[in-house]
Amino acid sequence: MKSLIVIPARYASTRFPGKPLAEIGGVPMLQRTSDVARQVGNFVVATDDARIEDFCAAHNLPVVMTDPDLPSGSDRAKAAADMFDPDADIIVNLQGDAPFTPPSYVQACLDALTRDPDADIATPVVALSWRALDDLRAAKLTTPFSGTCAIVGDTGRARWFSKNIVPAIREEATLRRDSNISPVLQHVGLYAYRRDALARYVTLPSSPYEALEGLEQLRALENGMIIACARVDSHPMSQAGIDTPEDVARAEAKLKALGQ
Image (cartoon, rainbow, N blue to C red; front, side, top):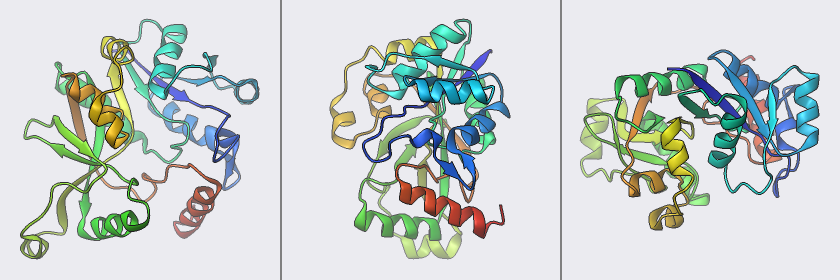
């Protein structure tokens, strides 16, 4: 299967204008994300702003200009793939504000679609340690919509996603004694779509639970699409998405602590 990684990168942002070009540890965020994609395969940046287009040209990054009125990164990924590589079978949506996504996560999504030929979409999930679960619980006390959990069946297909921590755990003390890993799976916001599945997905209206939870992937599930979940190992930087200038500071502190 031929794949294309699309990196949607918008300059306009209410909370963080110019976010894709912000430097993290002296390296522009979009450059970091592009380096991730380059390690996996063919990629293109999708933008609607000439400043990002100029940055890509100066740094020899493939780029296409998409309609600024497209409603989501998924729509932008489809438009970019149609323009840049209409023969690609698999389209990966790697958000431009996810510069610390391990390349192995992208490859895991591609492998999941190979293993499950009936799956429409693939996305990674991480089994949380008890410590990581405690950290997520603490974070949700102040930011309840941070972090997404997944329920995955024995076949590796998603049954549900939620901004709540699921499942509830009745015998937690016993489970903590038996294992260092909790039964909670945290979702990583990275998607690989079969081309026809993405073409269908962007035509679907927002679904009821998608609107309630604010999770695009629920639109796919509510319309009977199959999402394969690739289990990946936790990585110290993998959850560090960048939404605000404060996130940049936190990411730089993490990099410094890791000696990078």
